[in-house]
Image (cartoon, rainbow, N blue to C red; front, side, top):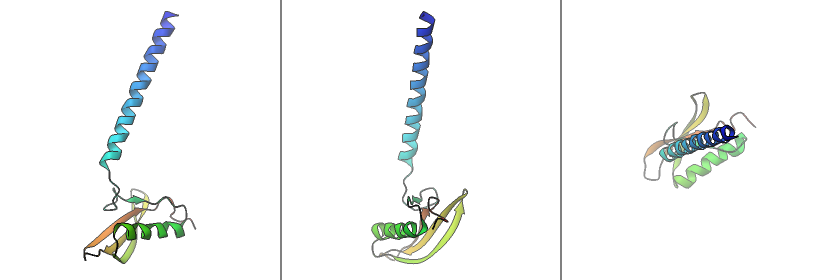
Length: 110
């Protein structure tokens, strides 16, 4: 019985340490990556599940984050086996920039 309690205590301790480590790592990753649309790594993930509403969500995001901007073009790109829309805009301050959207959730779904 004493051995069972000892083994149980070790299992609980090991499990709780492993869980805490995973939570700490996940928090660090989430805190260090800001999805601002400035690159593939910081692409805005579009949650929509079909192309119509997905594209609408991209343009709504641009209108919200870059009011008064003008869309100059768009490119479909593949990065690390994921599809991305890269939308070329000119901001209201006349700065040209690209905005990256991860479209893997809706790409090819009508």
